[in-house]
Length: 117
Image 1: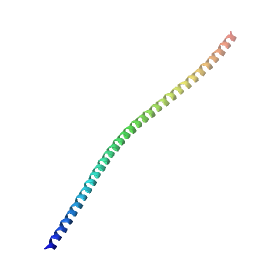
Image 2 (image 1 turned 180 degrees about the vertical axis):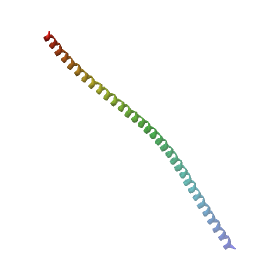
Image 3 (image 1 turned 90 degrees about the vertical axis):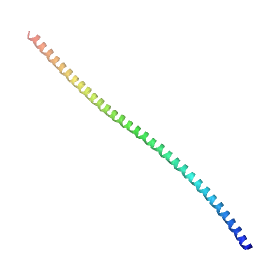
Image 4 (image 1 turned 180 degrees about the horizontal axis):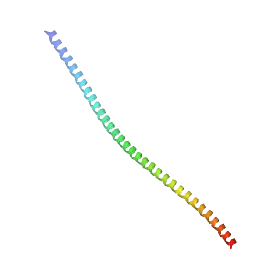
């Protein structure tokens, strides 16, 4: 009978140790869960921040592309205007040379007419 009491005490002590181990394991699992939740929340926040940054960069890229396209169109229009101006100046110069040549011919004709009179 004394042996049975001693065995019950041993079992009770072992149960207390198992309970303590379970409590410790439960606390460790709860702490790990909390760290996991915090890490997951942090990762979600970082993902959201990166998505917003990507959206901003895409928007800035689209704006830069539109500006670049407008600048190219403006440059093409300016080049066309400059080409037209050069052509007009070239035509004006040619017309001026024709007028000078005509004036020389008229001057020669007037001299000839004067000599004939």
